[in-house]
Image (cartoon, rainbow over all chains, first blue to last red; front, side):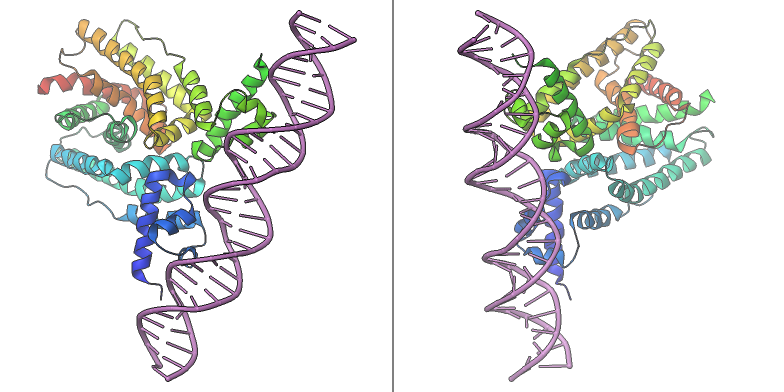
Length: 190
Length: 190
DNA sequence: AAACGGCGGAACGCAACCGTTACGTCCTGG
DNA sequence: CCAGGACGTAACGGTTGCGTTCCGCCGTTT
C-alpha cells in the first residue's frame, strides 16, 4: 500500500545524504527534507536510522557483479579492474563506501551487513578467478585466492577511495601487469 | 600558562573519542567528560572541534617514520611492511585513519591536513625506496614510485583497515614476495 | 599578603534532531 | 458515494550539543 515513487525518493535521498554528510551525521529529518517527504512516510517504512540505511545500502550493494570468464587470466583481471575502477569512480560510491567501512569498524551490525553484501561475493569472484587461471595453467597451483583479492582490490581501493590522487591513463595497465606478476610469484615461495 | 597535564589529558581524550565514535559524532562535551576537564579548558586552547582535531591529529601523524635503508630492496620492503603492519594494528590508529580518510573526502580542510601530514612523507619514502633499489640494480630503471607506494600500502591497508580479516602468519611474507615481483615487472611494459 | 589566571562546575540561549501524535487532504477500491 | 489509508504538515516533549558566561577555588607570582 506504500507508494512506490515515494519509497524511491527516500532511497535516493538516503544515498545522497549518506554521500554528503556520512552515516554519523545523517538525520532522518534531513532525508525527509531532501526527498520532499514527511518524516511519517519514513517511519512508516523503517523503524530507525540504522535499519533504514542497512536495508537500502545492502539492497544496492547486493546487485551482484557477474563472475568474469573471458577465457584468459589477463582478460579476467583486466575486466575486474575496470569494473572496480568504474564503481569506485562514481561520486556517491566513493564517498559512501569508505564512510561505511569506517563505521563498520565500530558498529557490528553494519560490519555484518557489509560482510554479507560485499565480502561473500568478493570471495566467490576471487576463488573463481584464481581457480580458472590455475586450471588453465596461467597461475601456479598454490596461489592463494585471498592474497589475490587483496592484491587486486587493495591498490585500486587505496588509490581511488583513500589517496584520491588523479590516475594517469596507463596506470590501470601498469597495475594489471604488476598484479599478474605478483600472483604468479606467490606460489613459488611455498 | 595553560597547564600541560590538562592539555595531555585532552589530547588523549580526543584520540580515544575519535576512535570510538568517529569525527562526525565527536562532541566537545564528550571530550571534556572523558578528559575529566571543563569545557572551558578546551575552548581556552582551541576555538572549535575541527581546529582541535586537526591540530591534535596532525601532531600525532607528523611524528615521521625514518627512511628505510637496510642495504637491500627486500630488506627495505620488509621493514616498511612491518612498520605499516604494526601501525595499522593499533586499535586506535585502525579506527581513526579510515574514519578521517572518509571524512577527508568531504571536508577539504581535513583532506589538506592529512595530505601534508601523511602523503608528503609517504611519497618521500616511496621515492627513496625505489631510487635506492634502482641504483642497486634491484629494480628496472623505469619503475614508477607512485605505483610502488600503491602496491605496498594498498593491500596492507585494505586488509588491516578495511577488510579486517585475520592475517595468517605467512601473509606478510607472501605479500612481500608478491610486491617485489610486481614492481620488477612494471617497467618491462614500457 | 595580594593579585593573577587557569581550573571545574553550572547554567545560559540557541539550534538540531529524535520518535510520536493529531490533523486535513487526496487517491483508490468497493 | 463512501471508507480506508498513505500522504504532508505541524507540533509535541525530550535529548544533545553548541559556544559563552559567571562563579568560587586554588596554586603561582610578585
